[in-house]
Image (tube, rainbow, N blue to C red; front, side, top):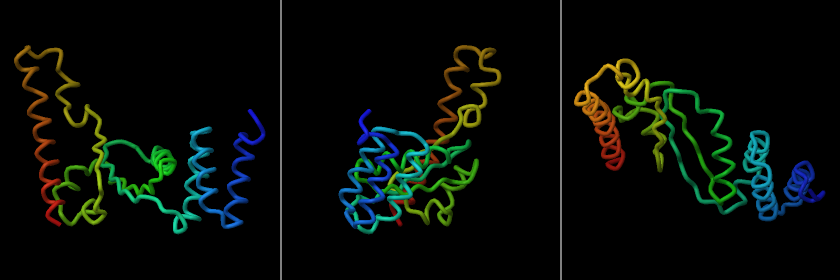
Length: 169
């Protein structure tokens, strides 16, 4: 690895470019750093520097909501850094733990106030369809075939309700 591609040297170069007001060059160098070293520590650095120069860059804005039943917070800086490397200023809203249904049906929820461009439903299958985890092996073929469709149809209905309600706002 050349000295120029050393992550520590690249970080110093980004900071120097920001100090000089060369924001476009700093942005390109920051994206290059991310592609070279896509790790948590680098993501934190990328996001911190993005926050310093956001107003100076022509980035596409995108709002992503993640509704979840498990911990997703550690991936948020990684998603934001990856998006930045492609010219996107990603704003992420993480819903409260296990409130995804309430968030989708309550038009006054933080999800609606956030007004995302896209929503990721990150739900563990043992929570979304517990029947698939507990007694699945004891079910007849016909019972097993019907099980997921009913549960996932309910999730689909709630998701469709959210989509229709969000579009009306």
